[in-house]
Image (cartoon, rainbow, N blue to C red; front, side, top):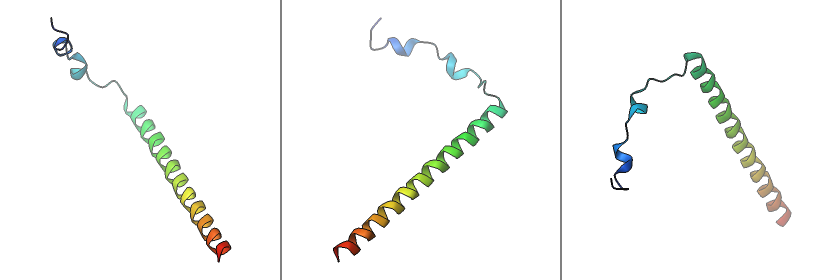
Length: 63
């Protein structure tokens, strides 16, 4: 058997298997994901505001 084609001859049982994740667990993961996205977005906005304030301060300092 060729090394190149070895991976293609394996069974694809994992594709046909049904998801074992319960509905409650999916809802919990969705809440966690949305919370993480919200925190990252707020962090990005805070970073942008700090950068803007720094630029304005440097501009006034230079003038």
